[in-house]
Amino acid sequence: MTDPTKGASMLQGKTAVVTGSTSGIGLAIARALAADGANVVINGFGDKAEIERLRAAIEAEYGVKTLYSPADMTKPSEIARMIATAEATFGGVDVLVNNAGIQHVAPVEAFPAEMWDAIIAVNLSAAFHAIRAALPGMKRRKWGRIINTASAHGLVASAHKAAYVAAKHGLVGLTKVVAIETANDGITCNAICPGWVLTPLVEQQIAARAAAAGQTVEAAQTALLAEKQPMLAFTRPESIGALAVFLCTEAAATITGAAYPIDGGWT
Image (cartoon, rainbow, N blue to C red; front, side, top):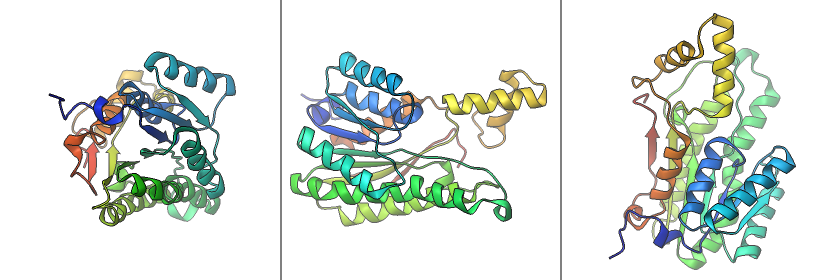
C-alpha cells in the first residue's frame, strides 16, 4: 500500500516551478521536490556558471529534468513566459512555489519609495502573476499545488520592515483567495511562514552583527534568535523543503488556504 505521507507517488513525472531558487530556501524546496520525482524549473539571479552547476547537479542527483529560467520577477511578461516555457517543455506546471523575495530595512518615513515598489513587485505581485498564468493548466488537469513562501512577517510585524511585512501579509491574503476559488478544482494553495532560517544571506547578517558588537558568531546568533523566537534554533532550509513536499501529498489534499508557521514559536 502506498504511504500517503510520502510524496513520490504524487510527484513522480510532475513538474514544479520554484521562483527564487538558485540559493537558500528556494533551492532547498527545488531539491526536495526533485528528490520526490518532480521535474523542476529553477529561477533566480546569480553567476551563470554556478547556476548551471546547480541545475546539472539536481538533474544528475535525482534523475529528473531540470530547466533554468532567468525570468525577472518584477516583469509580468517574463513571469508569464517562464510558465509558458515550462508548460511547453514538460506538458504542464503541476506545482508552483512562489518563493522569490527581497528585503530592505528602514523606518517608514525614510523608506525609499523605489524600494517599496520593488519589494511589493517581487514579494507579492510576482506571485499573483505566476498563479494567474499557471491556474488555467492546473484547472484543465484537475490537479495543482500552489505554495507561497510567506514569512512569520506574513502573520506578525516588526519595525522598519514596512514593505516586507505588507507584502507578506498580502501574500497570505492572496493564498486564501486562491484557495477559495480553486477549492473544487483539485488544487490547493497554502503559505509557508518561516521564522529565522540559516541561509547564506542570514549568515552574512550575523557575521556583520557579531563584528559590530564585538561578539562571537555564536553569541550573535543567539541574540538574534532571542529577539523573536522562544526556540533558540534556526529552521533548516531542508525542513521547509520537506514541508513543501508534504503539502503536495495526498495526505494534504484537503489542506488549503492555510498559513503554516515554521518559526520556533515566534508567532
